[in-house]
Length: 233
Image (cartoon, rainbow, N blue to C red):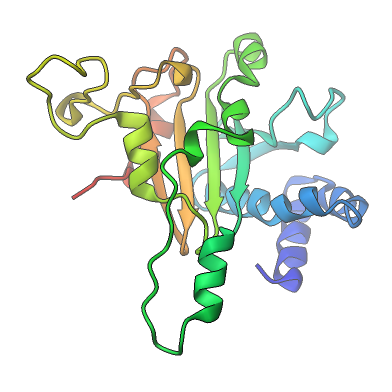
């Protein structure tokens, strides 16, 4: 997102919801790591704003608690409160190097790391807010934005969340198998407090629902989100 577009979108949100996101943005000018994530936080809200009637929108910078103990966004979707954490997956250096060295029109193969979703700072988001989720008793979602040259894609995220695609008759992987005819159930036990993942890549959003989450979102929310459910056709 170009800086001019980012500023316009921030002003739009501040005007519509009475937030003070622009003040937060201006205060981060010398904090590059936080600045890099800011456009993704805005893209997340713009997506929800098109899909739901938003109200009581609160950015983590506007809450009294430490930002380390609260997610990026808490808001009402069609009158139902939810919380959303945003994570930006930046350019993979190998992909950037290959693209830079490629000749005009030459096809390049992007490096995708299957373990990206299993390690590093992203894994902290799976359990970081469990105390707050329990306290507020509201659904929790994680929103990824992945650079075109990032090393995470839709298929890897699907495999991580839902396990093998087909039933395993050997009995070696019975807990990981997911039956899509009965719903979308995460095979990862760490995710029982996560209601769904989003991944925004190449301008497209895919959703990964979790029917086995402990706190159930209202049906009106789930029905709208399932329109974006990722299916590996």
